[in-house]
Length: 525
Image: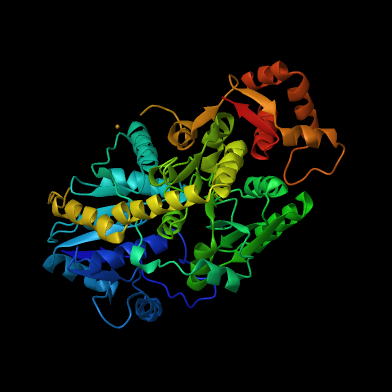
């Protein structure tokens, strides 16, 4: 069987490659290892254009990128003009791997007479991109029983099933594709640990210091709000007997990096914060090798898996991650690291349910992330526990590396694809609505540990009381104007704030959530 794709490879020689992060990298890596592990007999990448001028540009870029990805030997994908596709589909058996956008377009090909039956494997990364609504509806119309939809985590599978149930309810169209869960992977052999002392020497990190590391996209809109991590870092640094360093590295947003550095400066000089934009593979290797604890407090609905967690575990690092979406599939709480509770804001979900169809900027993801709380007390305790226990860090790191080798190495992951492809039914090529919106609480509320509501008790943290006692001061970070009033009410009349929250008063919910995210309030479970 030949694997077909409409996503072309892109050279990493660009200053800012469009596809250097996220689903495109995962798509390219999966294709590479399906080919190298002989799951498929070949890979044909078809140009997504009929324009000769653009075809030449795509072809040139493809040739350069394939040299970077595959080297000069071994099996390699073949680039073909889109006009060659009809002949190819009449003469060979194909499966098409889609990242989502192409699935309903590929499905329309099956209305063409004379083609051999083929199935479409749709690899779902982010479930709810706004422009994917036509894709969801298109799947319901064009899918058949041979198709398969692959989600990378159990939480993403649940969310995707909910979306498709909504599509069926409002359109009376049923998606016939099977929904399965197969994780992404990494090549564990490509992550050899460097000598810790050498890595620290190159990075100019003191040998006796503790080093915390975050690697991922530097964006609160599409990845993670890192302000709570910085606050926790300063809280730890104040009592740590060792110098504490925090490095934040990833695809760079200079404005966001500057804001994080500014916040750290406002909080004091105890924590040594460094932001590294767009680190090379060599720099990432040094960072992982020098690190003590890897932390990823993701809170965004576009995050459904977490390749960086696998990379950190491959370097035998203990991982502290938010109890969120696919992260809970990867990290074994208490064994390979710690999962930090997260809290979903149902009031924000209600507003997003109503307004997201009108949001053309993907602001829904940012809005919901700003209303998702990562428990800062638990984050502090987990980090402090690991920093104070060298043996626990080593044990968790060793178990994490073994887990990656046993379940997430590409050899293991592609074996799941081999079984999946071999058992697909060869369905032939051709030939249902309540009035409600897609509810973000039902769909994504399960990503979090639990949902906040007025029945929860909320109290001031020690940091909240200290901050209240030092008023009036300039509000640090993104705290709301009524922060002082709310902190005082929670401190003096906690029953009153509970009454307001039970009444679903949005302005109070927004302010309370902001204070929870800042670690000035806490949820009492």
